[in-house]
Length: 574
Image (cartoon, rainbow, N blue to C red; front, side):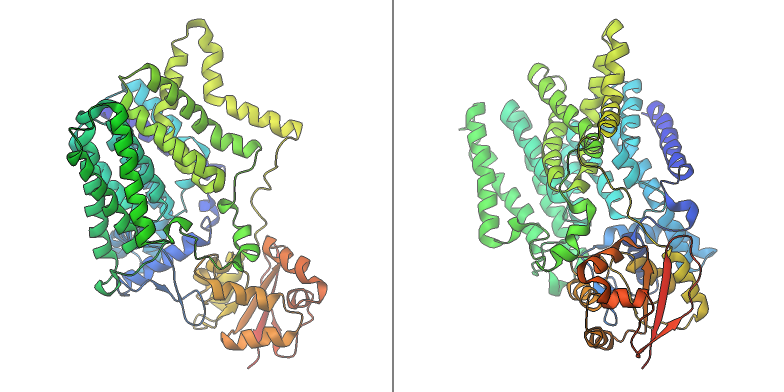
């Protein structure tokens, strides 16, 4: 394993260096990737400064009351542990910032090691290095593990690899480790429900195909998952919240699902003698899945609406429709780059499963994960990163098969490695499909934040500004904002849109007084700003402020020059 691990880790370092040199990572600019990263560091700082483990309120959001997001503690804890040794030489805020810059690249090292561990029984050293390279240099994977991106998705991808690695290796212990990793992933976020679905499908099909020899692995995984999720709930939530039902983070709902799945595996014992053929095992397995689904429908009927099932419909047109990563994938060059390798790997895995039983464990795990994640990616493009993490085993085997084609390998190897990239270039040149608009225009909010922080370090008056840049401005300036781009920030988002879209200044003034707003910060050039102008025209409150036509209860303030955008800043006169 060491022979493959060292070159693979060097490739990881190369990928990280390329992301910095090409400025894909904002590390060189002193900014983080997005608002989630800033709010994550704010949570970690609060935890290290003495906020209680159960107190997840972020005071920088939902001014002046604070906001409790749907995030959980595992990723906070990882950053805090990384920052703790740094506090010897740095203040807590600086230590957390440094740890946040590098936590995701560190987790990528662990993901590569877990991948090699999982594939080691099935591939030689060269194949393991190839698998690591395919994983490291996929676009979505590079994006998840960027420096300056302290985001829980890096931990989720690591845990996905750990679960798949456990499923790819034979033995009971590997199944237990996979179940515990799946429980930890569920603790991190509800996105792990897809991973649990894929894992149960893979273990169930292995039992259907091979019989009793795989029965104990399915039982072990299910029990480890249920026990791990129960323990996680006991650690994450206070006893008073153990029976609380929430669908967007770990609660009784998700733990109940895990125990319903474990309960269903009792039929593997009770019906073992009867399930002596693959047809009977398939029938029994279908019944087990139906039992678990039926119990969930009876106990938690809103579960099947998903984590966003309680989303206020008023947020869809004004916020959720603007969240690019939560939108369905559209045909075009970007979709081809994201989904061609998973689709190619899915087809090859299915073909090899039919023809070759020697690699059933890794191929079945990958096939089921790819089936679940690829279909989910069509609904939300952000799931494509999980699909790309799952395509490694069959894609590696496909490349190795192409290398064995003799003279044809000159064509076959480039085709399976970069054929989708060439096809994407053709699509762009021919003007086919939906064009990716790229990164939206973002003003230099870090400049304004630094200006406000230095202007009066003691000033903590709330700021009314846009939804998406709010978290960055709040974290860097210390001024709370009305809302961030989160589905739990319903009232804050509605207040931002209601005030900035108001045609009557009195409506905006009422909202400003309700939230004790001290400053209003806007930027001409911010992509979000165009929506307000398009919605209400030049007579809206937002348009008036941009051109300097402010009501008497606002006073214009000087603003710093910025590389991107033109800021306007107003102080609210009491």
